[in-house]
Amino acid sequence: MSVSRTLLLIASSANPELLRTPRDLGLDIVLSTRTPPADASLYDIHLDVDEFDEEAVLSAVRAHLADGGRVDAVATFHEGALHVAARVAAELGLPGNSVEAVRAMRDKFVTGRRLEEAGVPTPATRIVTTYDQALATAEELGYPLVLKPQASGASQGVTKVVDEEQLRAAFENIAGIYDLDSFDEGDYTVPNVARVYAYPDAKGVLVQEYVGARSSPSTSCTAAASTARWASTTSRTPSRSRTSSRAPTPPRRCCPRRTRRPW
Image 1: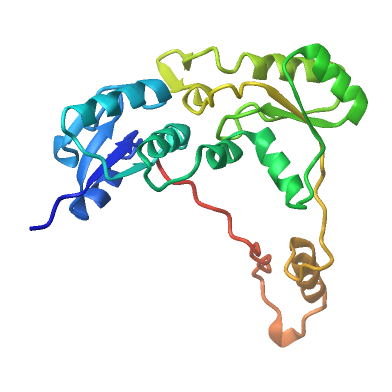
Image 2 (image 1 turned 45 degrees about the vertical axis):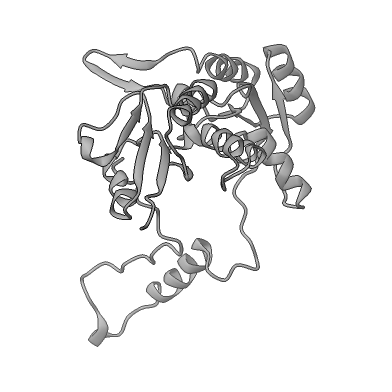
């Protein structure tokens, strides 16, 4: 007789259809999230807890196990809950990303340090918590600069600055980016991504040197080369038999733009 396997899923994601995959695999689902999907057939047990709060989730999982429940694997669909899943998996001795690996993924300052250690060129970066520190860094690195939150998502708060006035505005914006739950305008409300993707103890401001676009001579497929080839062919005077009133079509991008998913 086979024993059912139980997946602890932290955060149901904005797309509850993603829950159908583990369900179709025959797994029992323990769902740890504040707001479960309307379709209760997608999970077996609901742990009503803030899925982004490590200690709260750990406490709920411990209670679940103490009551005779089981957990065979831990997963999450939500980037903002990666650190929670890592903590739970580590405590239960289950496979998964280590706490250190998740920190390196989510904390942009740590990410930069890991890249440097691996010999990958990265922009000069300083982490600051006060405007005076940001100003001192600007004097050290020189303008233009890029400011960004230490840990957030969707490029929120990422700002290029070219002088002290813009530096102050960008710093104050990022330093206060975690204060609001949402952004409201009339009847329109959107969640504050920074609150959703906040990482514990990683709410500093990164100040980076600005690295402009560069062309790589070793890359055969570049927009410049492609455009040059297109221009050289379309600039020639066509023969009478090949004359067309239709405008020439520019070359396609070498790397197609990623399509944003609707969730």
